[in-house]
Image 1 (cartoon, rainbow, N blue to C red):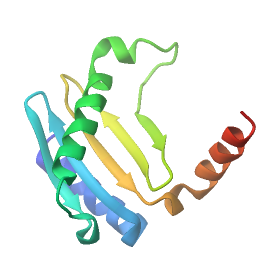
Image 2: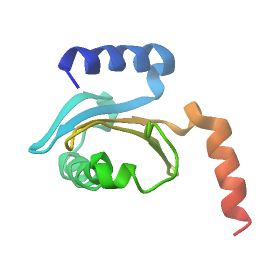
Image 3: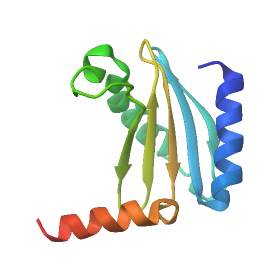
Length: 120
């Protein structure tokens, strides 16, 4: 994804979610770039945590992962955690963008998922 596309996505997400945006990260086969991190989340050790998560997500940008499901047009994944919702937009050749948001942005989805988990 060209840098201009990531800039446009970051601006859109910031405008849409305000202070709920936690971070935006762009990755490629060799590493990743921090596009945005909310200032209150910057702390020692966060870079290693981000790198570990991106290494995990990078696998979803491979063609075999996209072919693993019987649906066309793989758009991305959503992961729900107690503290955050993570959107992953995998692109081609081990490239992609990761957006982390506070859970209030995905209140309905997060609430629905919690209700499901409570029943397990």
